[in-house]
Length: 159
Length: 159
DNA sequence: TAATTAGTTCAGAAATATATGAACTAAAAA
DNA sequence: TTTTTAGTTCATATATTTCTGAACTAATTA
Image (tube, rainbow over all chains, first blue to last red; front, side, top):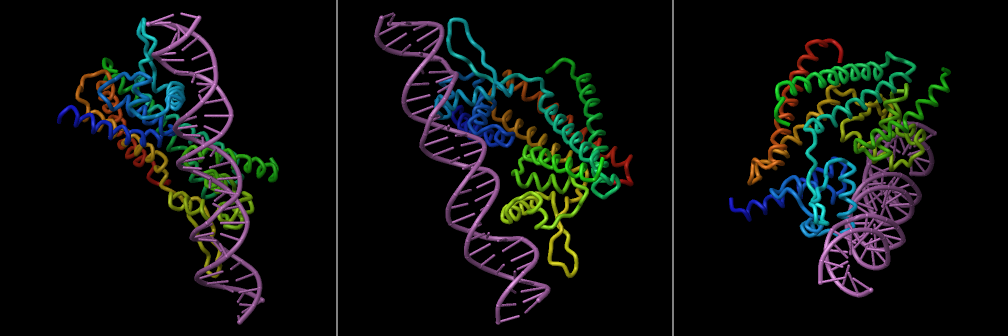
């Protein structure tokens, strides 16, 4: 694969990546920026490079970058004597990807517990189903924490 | 707690539940219907009862119920000699709640693998980070399947 | 000091999602 | 046969989200 071919394919993947991040709740431009910073071999982009690369307005870039920083997925570095910001994906703890899911599972479990607590009939079909779900969710939540420890123990060095 | 008190609190919870389901990507009315069918002790609602209870138009109800059926979370039963549909939450396999998360994790892992495959430099900071994430995600995906089997083995009867 | 650079802010335009009323169908009841 | 019931469909109204241009700030350079 030539370098141009690769870059062309990567830029196509940026669009697909954007749609992937949209589904996670990011607005389209934020998703594409995140895609750009993740997919390309170039690992730092200035504000103007992002504007140019994605053909978006400066205000859109400014707004999306603010959102991405607040969401803790993008950061910028600065270089002494250089006023530009160099944006890059934040090197998160790798567990953040699964931690998010753990948080959602906990929310679901908590929500269902509130529902169950308010039921007059705790033995109705729905109540029993909800009980079962809470039990199963709590099982996975506990195991999740064990798995994380186990994984860390086996991978002390990297990450 | 009196019955009216309980019902009042449950109706408040229906609104909160609606917001919870919104976050999962359901439109507001679909979320509230799902909340209604989940939270209240009454386990079956007719079309008109839903319209009346949530103060929405028939077309909104029709549209939202269609979405909920397609999404596989609501179903209706019918009674011989009765033209009405009785809507209820679908008694899903309880694992569906965690299976959704497994699907998302798999999508993330697959997406990152495509990104990595397209990198010219597989040893850049981002590439190494992505490799680590893929490895960790695949670890959790494998363990997830084991946990599910384990849980089923310990809970043959219920659910 | 004037011009340029590197952005930010915000009012409003454009796009998208959501909800509604009105007209409709198809079955059942009067 | 007419009316009622139980919804569906669709054009459009309403609300929300997203994006942009224009005016701005604050630092740097000429």
